[in-house]
Length: 316
Ligand SMILES: C[S@@+](CC[C@H](N)C(=O)[O-])C[C@H]1O[C@@H](n2cnc3c(N)ncnc32)[C@H](O)[C@@H]1O
Image (cartoon, rainbow, N blue to C red; front, side):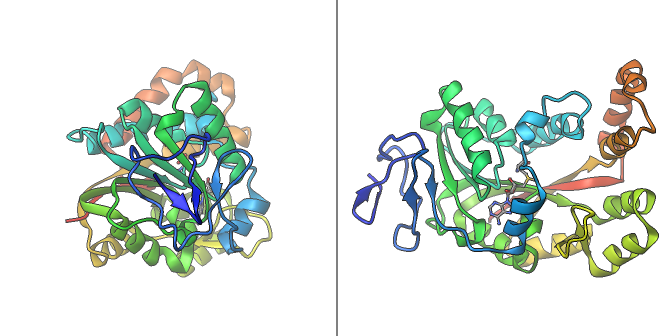
C-alpha cells in the first residue's frame, strides 16, 4: 500500500493504491496532495512553459480534436497510432507499467488502454485536461488502470527504474534548456530494456510552414535561434526545436539506443492552415477526401518533409 505523509495514498478515483500498483511515487520527495477530484497533485512552479499553457492555449484537448473531421489532429492521429503499432509490435502489454508524460486529455492514453496496457500513470500540468481524462476513464470503466498526477514533469520525483514504457508526445520541447535533463530523467525512470517513444517538432517542416504563412524575418530568426513561437502573438515565449542530427545526438548522449524514427508528414498541417485561411474550402476537401488520404498515405511511407519526428528509443 502506498503511503504519503502517513496518509494512505488513493488513486485518482478514490481507490486505495495497493500492492497491485508497485511503489512508483517517491513520497519523500513529493509534496503530493489528493484533491477533491481525486487527482494527485502538487503546487506547480511557474516556468515559461507553464505560463504559456496557462495564458496562450485553451488546453490540448487533442482526444476531442481527434474526432473533429478535417482538424489537423484528426488527419495526423491515425499516422501516430500506426507508428506506435510498429514500435510496440513485439510488446506484451499486460504486465507492463507505462507512463504518458504530458498526456493532455489522453489522446494516446486511450490508445495505450485499447492496446491492452493496464497500468498507466498520466502526468500533465494542465489540470482541466486531467479532469477530462478522469471523466473519460469513469465513463469507460478504466478507473483501475490509470493514476492521474497533476504536476510538471521536471518537479515530479518517481521511483527510478519503475517503467517499461514512457510515451511523451509533443511535450519535451517545452522544457527548453531543460530538454536534456528531461531525456535523462526519462532514462532513469525506465527499467533496463525499457522503451521511450517520444516526438517533437522537426525544424525543416516548421521553417517551411513559417516561410509560407508568416514572414521571412520570423523564419530566419527561428532557424538561427533554433527556437520557435508556438503562437504568433507578441509573446517572448520561444521553444526549442532541433534538426534530426541534433536531437539524435541528445538521445545517444543520454545513453539511449535509437531503434527507429518515423516522421509525421507536414501535409496535414499545410492543408489545415490553407483551409483555415479560406484558400481551400471544406467542400473541396470533402469532394476529394479519398484522394487526399491516399496522398497522405503515400507521404507517410515515402515523404521527407515532417511536422514531427517520432522516435523509438531503448534503454540498454
Ligand atoms: C501538445 S500537447 C500533447 C498532449 C498529448 N501528449 C497528445 O499528444 O495528445 C502538450 C501537453 O504537454 C503538457 N505539458 C507541457 N509541458 C509540461 C510539463 N513541463 N509538465 C507537465 N506537462 C506539460 C501540456 O499541458 C499539454 O497537455
